[in-house]
Image (cartoon, rainbow, N blue to C red; front, side, top):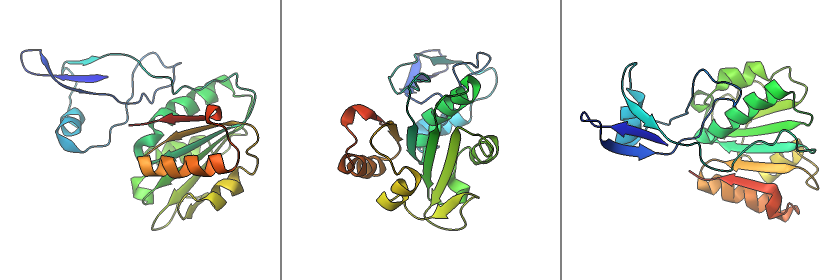
Length: 195
């Protein structure tokens, strides 16, 4: 929970954001903020020395590195935030399973963390990133299309095991969940983070 303060130190407003930093990183805290509205505009203009308050962390949308089966992450837009923490943790802990991130955005210029996702995991044996864009040229390893049932099946043909994490716009998550349920994925293997 990020709390922005007034000049007298009292609370102005607060909003919840997902942590992008790996749990192994202790020297700083990174949040991904999509700038829209008064709160995020003010948050984006914070400078060193400004006073804020942080509370938490809260929530249960967590990566379990001991999970014995593959993990599929379905993300749309700024919904990538909690997945960045998970991917960074998986890279440090040398995940024993495969992690597939299917990441949908409007265009390449709208993709948060594009450089890190393109470069850091390009040669990983266990972490695979695939980009989907609505328009324009997709990044390397991506395609111009919606994240559809066919696309999901192409990247994850076996729905009988594994954990499926969803974070993004509500319509995106509802469509993804419908596809997963249609293919026999039970609710206990679908984790959803709403924002």
